[in-house]
Image 1: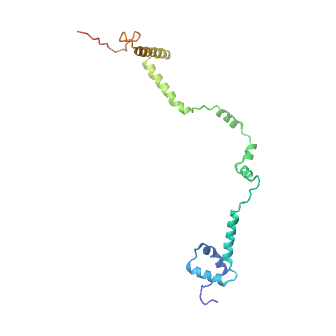
Image 2: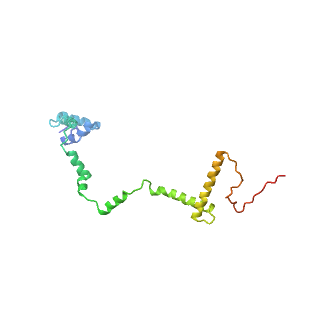
Image 3: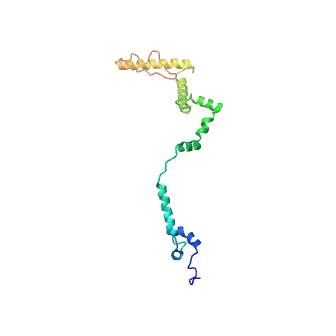
Length: 186
């Protein structure tokens, strides 16, 4: 029996505090009791040293690289990504047909063509109202061709230095509602 109460540790308590001791987290009142038990108990004296030596051996074995068995990496990959099952599985007819259809994909996606189509419709509506008298598509093309021809001729005349003969081109009609004011020289 001890003359100082709670001054001795049992071997089981000593082992429970061992990791805290090695980590440096033992409180002061337990630390002194733990060290006293380590000195007095023959069974527990070498226990901290044995743990430290075991940890050192584990670290040294961890640093030693062992050769990888042949084919291990390939077997792991086959089991994890399922290439063996995928090679034996056959795609359904619907999925094969879908892949065949995807082969006909266009370089420009359809949503990108929507603004182009809208601009074309807008241009047609504008030109059909301003150029065509009756609004037919044939008349739009004919009037557009005549306007392009006149514009080209005016540009060519200006480039060659030719002065226009008349202020109004011979095949151009005035727009309804326009009144011409003639200069009267006095």
